[in-house]
Image (cartoon, rainbow, N blue to C red):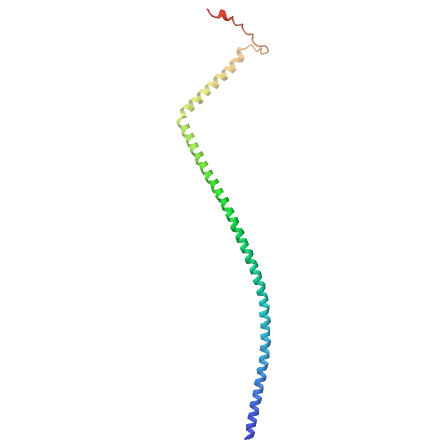
Length: 161
């Protein structure tokens, strides 16, 4: 029975040896995995440093652009106010022109009879003028080369009776 005890102790020792060997293999494999993870984390850290720098640069540029936009917005506000003033002036001008047009049209309506009379009298005057022009060449003797002689005026003493 002692042999059995030695055999079981030897089996336990072999089992323990196998356990230690498998544990060592597992730890070495784990070491490789941890080394790979450490390399990956180191690469990520350097990449994150680059991203952090780029993000900071972008943030500074964004702040500069925001300030520039704010300045331009303030300048644009004055332009918008000026355009608004021009629009108001144009609207007032349109209102004034509308009032003047309404006033003129009302005056024309009120003076319609007078305007018609003026047009009629001007037509009559034009007809008289045209008739006079057509009649005048018939009365003359067509000798327009020489002016018509003028009659002498009597002396001033003889004019009064």
